[in-house]
Image 1 (cartoon, rainbow, N blue to C red):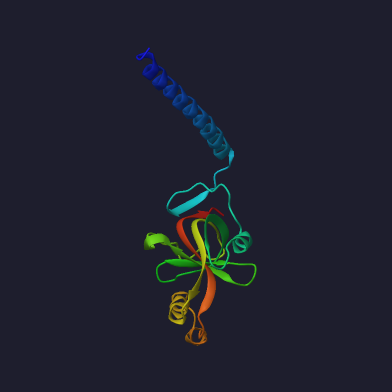
Image 2 (cartoon, rainbow, N blue to C red):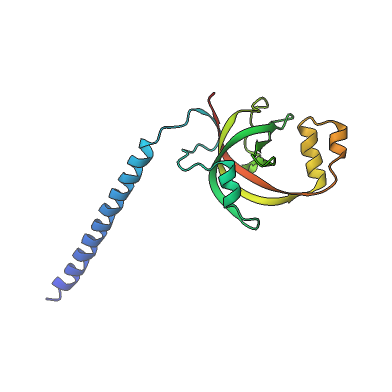
Length: 172
C-alpha cells in the first residue's frame, strides 16, 4: 500500500501537467493561426523586427496615454520631419497640429533622411515629457530650420514622445 501512494501521487501529477500542457498548446495554436491570418505589412524594417497586430493611429494613441504615464504599443503615422544630420529622430504628424517626437532605442538605428510624407509603423513606448529649450533648439537645427526660427524657441514644451525599438517604413 505504501508503494502505491507515491506512485499514484506522481502519476496524477504527471497527468495534470500533461493536461495543462496540451491546453496551453491549443491556445497557442489558436493565437498562431490568428496571427498568421493577418496580412504582413510590406516595407523595410529598421531596429527590432516585429509583426504589427493591433496598430493604433496617432489620434488613438493621444487618447490612450495619460499625461503622467506611458504605454507600450504599436502606432502608425506619417513622417513630418527627420533629423537631417543622421536620421537619429523623426516627428510624426498629428491631426491636432502637434507632432510626436520619435527617438530610437539605445541610439541603435537611424532612419533615412528623405522619408517625410511616408507612412511608418513603430513598436515601442509612448509617453509625455517636457523637452527643455536647448534640446528643442538642437532638434530645430538638426531639422534645418533657419536661425530666426530657432531663436523663436524660448519655452520648454510638454509633448508626446515615442521611444521606438523597431520601425517599419511602409512600401509606397
